[in-house]
Image 1 (cartoon, one colour):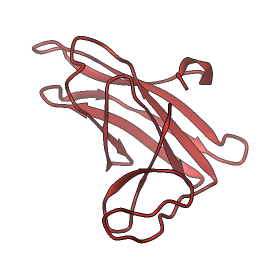
Image 2 (cartoon, helix red, strand yellow):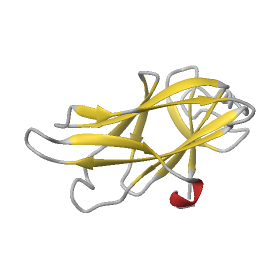
Image 3 (cartoon, helix red, strand yellow):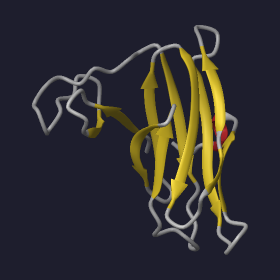
Amino acid sequence: MSKLRVKCSCGKFVNTQPGGICPECNKPLEIPEEAVIRLHRKGAFLGGGSGFFVQINNEPMGAIGSGETLMFPVKYGTYTLRATTVGVHNCISQTVTLSPENRVANFRTWASFGTLSGFVMVEAVRPEEIPE
């Protein structure tokens, strides 16, 4: 099941539902309703315990677990999505522009571990490639 993740004005990342309240500061969460970025992390035995850390436009958005799907509600605009993990410094990021004609962006992330050649990939996928 997909989780809706927003960053509260107090700085805490919250997995929530529309109308949610931040557990840190008890303020209502502002959830943009214009567009959404969906990100699925492939589940894998190798590296499955490693945390993947998500960034949107270089802003940290918290971790994504193995096999997890997150939805980031955003306003219309251009966004660069990347994921990193400990010990792997190469990231292949993706940029997308969201608009009334293109309201949903679907991505998958995964890693290839290697001493010198390891990388974390973010790739665009079709909606049906992301588990619900």
